[in-house]
Image (cartoon, rainbow, N blue to C red; front, side, top):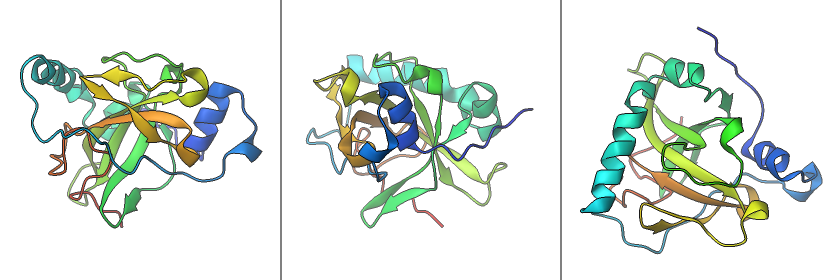
Length: 179
């Protein structure tokens, strides 16, 4: 098993994808909230989310995610008073401005002292740098929200590992805390 631990941050990932200089972006921030109520999904969206769950099921262990190409850790655990996200592990080759349901750019893991790797799979995150798309993408019937460093990317979280009482597609999950 090969694990790569990099000190690369989300800012660096976006800068590399967009060809920007490091001076332009300085902080790691995600979108505050989605304006679309998402407490319940059904119909075609529920079927699409079920398909996503099956796709990432083999990646619930961090070691398996690393082996599958999610081998760049994006900084520390992320949380604010209303909730957390956890640790983001990115697949750099997927940050290309496109949106495909079966190719999330990040897997999100929440701290879990009882888990084998010390973390538990929590969510997937789709990311499209704003420099590569002037309008927010739509996936699973949800419009992406500004996120990333300084709001420079369109993002969409899908909480398929840890239920989010705020909503399946909300950025922050009150059930996730950071040490």
